[in-house]
Image (cartoon, rainbow, N blue to C red; front, side, top):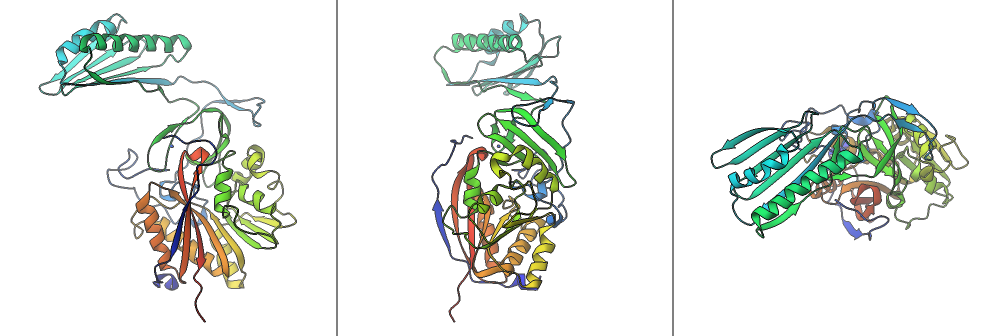
Length: 455
């Protein structure tokens, strides 16, 4: 688009931060460079421009991939609505115990002290040792459980134990073994241990996946206790999982999108209560969970048009996310709203051609990509196209709201702000930082408006 290549003056902006709202967050977007899914330093081959799909909210569409359906399932009534339960399957329980010593380690002495603990469990021992690099010892049990003991000469001793018996008895046996290792190390090293660290066990290969990464690559374990809904649409995998803290959580192709606890997200992307929607024309791009539409309809707008490409997202959310969407998705048309099941790009182009204008445009399609190479990433091209088309249907005094990304992704956010200077018309912007409960990280939201020119 030739008009998009014009360079407008650097947009002016304002910065605000909203205090932590809802549940406090702790240290689950997306695949960073050099992740196990891609070669080091690579983001993999680009996907086609995602104009024809609804990208996951928190992940760049470059990382989009449909997740396979979960395993064997049985249906029954559930207090959470759907009754989709999964039969239990064996999962590996990975336990760890780390010792950081205050001095170099006598590797041979540590090995001799700990060997009897594993041998009395009937475990077969294999010892690997390297000059100047310490020991790696593996212990294997007949039932397939195993332990790795890594002794580094510089003063780091690591124990990893993987078992497949996740009942109470099995967990107690693992805890008892690790307790013995910890006691023996304290006897051997006396007061020269700087830190002992035992992390909660990680369940690998479980039917219910509780682990999701934050946008900046940290791992969080959610308190998921039920798979409420799991279906594949033509565009993405759609899961709704139940969390004890956050209620039902919508997850699209492996990305946490929105939980029933996340009113803070919806309020932020609507302007944080500072806007008067009474009698206004509003356009929502995406928003298939219905949260934005539900909240705006309460504010007596003239007409709200929501454009969502994936009917199955709407179908799932209107059944199992009703605390978020209420009854607004039960019908695609209401007194002051309509929902179009279409790709938003042709709709925006059509509205621009017809000269239709809106007081507010709310982009709930995708987060700012984590890639910092916009020339190589089709997602940046997609975002610029959405921005340009949205500005063409936005009234001169209108406002455009969108999410940004995690506050820690400063390079990606700065690059997004740079893209705002490349639109066909000059714009200004402000940004706000909000704690979205289920994201467990601070999230940045943008308000963009056309720069007023002197006549």
